[in-house]
Length: 231
Image (cartoon, rainbow, N blue to C red; front, side, top):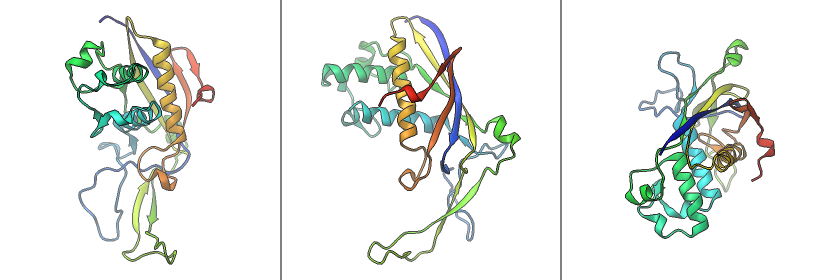
């Protein structure tokens, strides 16, 4: 394999609703927040981990491309490529090339090679900092009794969210090797971003959390718009 170039996809993630990506709290404090958002350990500002973006976009693409039945425990089953229909196999190979997978001789035989995509952590944008936005809100969540339509016992849980309107810098490095079909790669990456806009990022997406919009997308000097992406 010969690397031709590394392209940089950049842009902005704008929150359309509150976002909760949990910090994995190990302690609960009486009267405090039950679930905090992940924050940078030095600045204490919230951020979006690249792993959260990569994992959600990949899972949405697996659903969209009809490949989810070939996964097990969040990864593709061993030797699954020999059983996949040809059309699905092309999509599976492309997805493995872009997002990577565990080492496997069969995947190497299908020219999977090095993982193409490297997602960066997304930090609060300079524009958001200059606007002096509030970067944290606390939302009370209660369970509803389905028969009475009233709050059930146990009291509310207090969930920390990053509020609507906060923006994060977004960046993905894309390795382009000789023999890769760049247009196919770009198309599937943009479809993944579009699917994420239509779905949600982070926790409690079914309750309205985590709606995002990608703005000002560019690869090199090329401006990109998700409005033109067909799903």
